[in-house]
Length: 389
Ligand SMILES: Cc1cc2nc3c(=O)[nH]c(=O)nc-3n(C[C@H](O)[C@H](O)[C@H](O)COP(=O)(O)OP(=O)(O)OC[C@H]3O[C@@H](n4cnc5c(N)ncnc54)[C@H](O)[C@@H]3O)c2cc1C
Image (cartoon, rainbow, N blue to C red; front, side, top):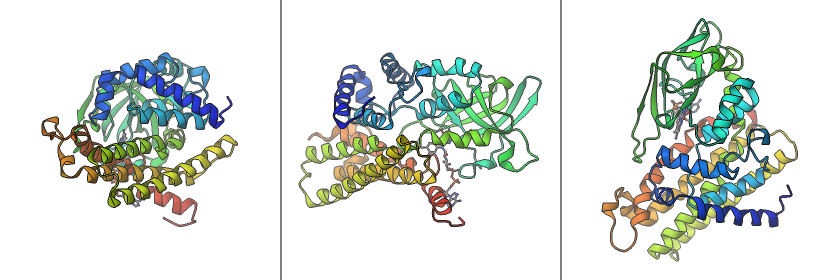
């Protein structure tokens, strides 16, 4: 496909038209209001996207993808964000899908990839545990082989949207005698299995994103293991590759820029030096981030393998989203603390005020999830600057 800027502009118009026509109005209002979409709302949107082949466009065509270039994907993502489409669950579409396409057995691929591509199956990621976050290799959830099953016992935490999930991919300890990374396996677990319980944790933003997942003697058939026994660490690490370029969150940043401008115009402060200065500073950072992301995309499209320096995208992109949210909250002022529409004031701040706090607090986790900024700094220091961190 010839992705000239001209062609991409035509494509952007097509996508914008589609979202305006097909994004369900209740979901649009939920996103605008900074509220948590329900599972049902998300599945309806998945089905709309799947119908035109846009749910998993980044997958290989044999699994229902479009084989789009990274530039086209970026354009798609931006238009979605600018038209109030919700963020899709990257655990399902960017993580487990590509992992199964690369490492799954034919039976696993046949069982799960079409179900994911149709938009009807939700996955969650069971990696972190109470004492294993940044130091993930310390995980202790145990899987003991009994005949054709593993019997899994332990607990996971911060499992995003586990209460929505049909399936969980998780890391479990299958050998305690070797160095920690060498005794971990990668399992696919049906969330309806006896012995699983899920406890959502209400966040400061008012959403139930995180969950605790308890596994008490859960039987998982051995054929639900991906890769060899004790080879889960390599698969877990490779999974991060699949979403690296998205981590710049260019579309998500542009969504916030748009909201900051709307809020400033609505409140009549767009022309004040205070707003203009902060806006300009963030806009410069966004331009720099975009230039850096496009540089990576060009390298990938030229067939180059990119290394750990891509961590810069994650660090910069996630921090910038937070800075836009802070600008929005500061622009609105104290009313941004109101979370209920009852607290709306005459004068039109309503939807911004309602959304601002929850959106801001939601993005607080962006510099922690998927490897905290401090850990990313270590990665850069170790691999690029030759440090010993
Ligand atoms: C929004 C969000 C969604 C998440 N979703 C999921 C999910 O779906 N599934 C899942 O498994 N997990 C999920 N997590 C958990 C996430 O992976 C962990 O929070 C993360 O890995 C950090 O681990 P921790 O919370 O245990 O913090 P810790 O590892 O205890 O870190 C605490 C602090 O110490 C710093 N630190 C730790 N080690 C070092 C070091 N070596 N050098 C310098 N500083 C260090 C950290 O940066 C942090 O500031 C999610 C987290 C968030 C915020």
